[in-house]
Length: 92
Image 1: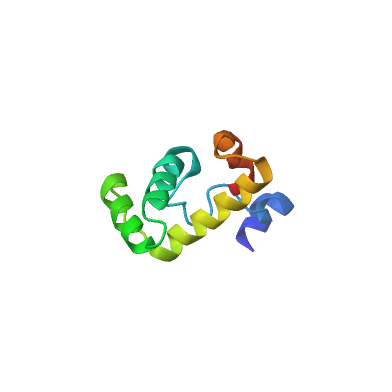
Image 2: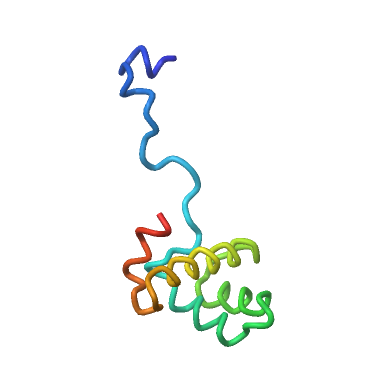
């Protein structure tokens, strides 16, 4: 109510920067994730442990699974991993 009174209808719009920030980012982490998953394709937990060590980030297997699923769907649309720079529009 305060935002509406102070700014009108514009005050009710969702502002940028809201919500949780991505732990794994396509622009930065895609290649390392791809290599780790390819190396340990049968054991996601091993790939996760390797990635946590190399990236210096903590995340769950579910987070890694969602990242893989999201980028896989985008690469299926784009045709190859080489088009990774275009993934941003699919994963934003």
